[in-house]
Amino acid sequence: MRARALVDLAALRANVRALRARAPRAQLMAVVKANAYGHGAVPCAKAARQAGAEWIGTALPQEALALRAAGDTGRMLCWLWTPGGPWREAVEAGIDVSVSGLWALEELCAAVRECGVPARVQLKIDTGLGRNGCTPGDWEKLVAAARDAEEAGLLKVTGVWSHFACADEPGHPSIRAQLDVFKDAVAYAERQGLAPEVRHIANSPATLTLPEAHFDLVRTGVAMYGISPSPEVGTPEELGLRPVMTLSASLASVKRVPGGHGISYGHAYTTPGETTLALVPLGYADGIPRSGSGTGPVMVGGKRYTVAGRVAMDQFVLDLGGDSAEAGDEAVLFGPGDRGEPTAEDWARATGTIAYEVVTRISSRVPRVYTGEIPDGAGETGGDRTAHGSDNGADEDAGA
Ligand SMILES: *Cc1c(COP(=O)(O)O)cnc(C)c1O
Image 1 (tube, rainbow, N blue to C red):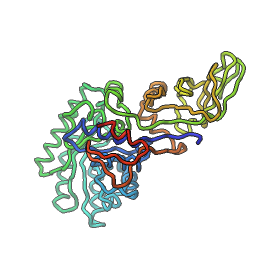
Image 2: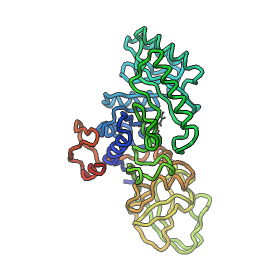
Image 3: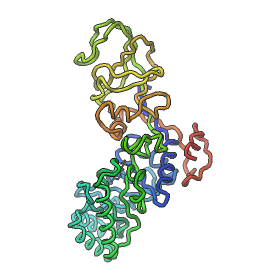
Image 4: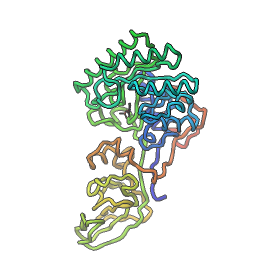
């Protein structure tokens, strides 16, 4: 195989269990937007369910509908809507829809009148992130309209929720301010007669650092994939998490060249002396950041090298110096790190981005290969598990 992203579903399940242990009184929503941060939405959602995730969360309604089509029947929420829906499809599929404003409530109610199925609605308050969500100033109007629609039998308000701006910087003053606004918004909605099943604001960093923010439900994305939200929150090991994705490729060419040889477009790198070059068949079309030119770390034969010259669309070069390798040898761009390979965090540091982006941008050109799957119906709940015939069943005990 040219390249692959190996996705360890046993690690994902262990991460879900570790996160549930951090928020023992809350339900857990596995956030699988953007193809599960590049890991593959359908297998990751299934693995998260097996580890006890009560909820699945997506940004787009289309992402939630695709998971229903793939057979997921549990609670699901999607939150990024634009005029036109698909409201009716989501309501008929029993997906909770997030509403941040009156235009959305009106479109939703029209769809409900058409199909005759009451909607499950979660009202979103903007407590300070400044993205989606109803402003505190408009909250009374939105709550009143939702309550009227509920009394008319069109919908049930199942949730009140919000999202943090700076939870990955523990102690940031905005965190407390957002919590205060959130508590007020929930209390107001309840005084007006709404009885949400779930109140929630915590993403991965708040789940890991701020028990006060757990409320009824925590929404974990990045941590479920074994990646720390930020260095301030801790390393994956400190947090009891294991990176789920390993990105590797087979060397496409290995050759000796003399000193003074320019490498890749622009000759941004020149061999300092006679040396061995290895060609890695991954490029920016595969989601390797072009900003990894001259900076990205890669392991070959147990040793780390740095991308020599520019990352091109399909390939980049490593200068192995005096070391030897052969075409077909494995180059590991990132993984859990326990074989000495770089991590997604290392790539993030090397390319001036966050590890969220490093894994999410790996494109569909790279096949996902799954390990650690457990068969359908062999569910796990909480820490209560039995051994299943997976090829790395030993990992099942990692979180025990
Ligand atoms: C992406 C997202 C999450 C998950 O965030 P992580 O930091 O990856 O845990 C939670 N809630 C909302 C609204 C999101 O968009």
